[in-house]
Image 1 (cartoon, rainbow, N blue to C red):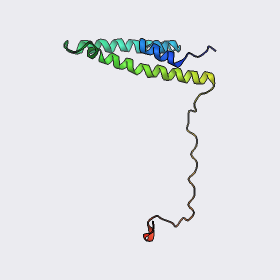
Image 2: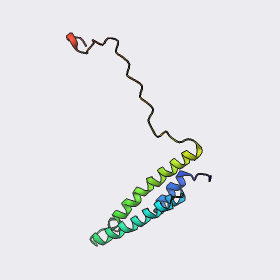
Image 3: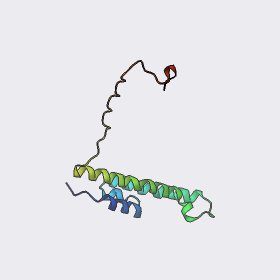
Image 4: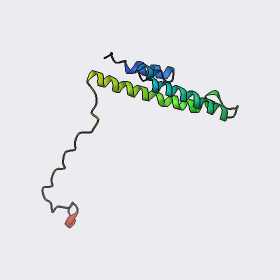
Length: 115
């Protein structure tokens, strides 16, 4: 099994280029999908916004998808690193301990004017 890539490196790659973080963690299909959708939504928003908007405003939809891909790549890299190093978080919450039994089951707060 290959050594896991540093999640911070994946984060940097995801910030620099859409989909690059996913490709770095060997999830190329997901990375290319994000890259295609960034381009697609950038073109849609560029064509549908008025020309007097700023360049960033004209690419807003694509930048939004890019912003969604950044934490996704980082989170997936953290999970892969945790699994490969043996520090994987549990997938289910620990069982809840039962509530302690009341000493006097007839007690109700505020009864008979007492607190």
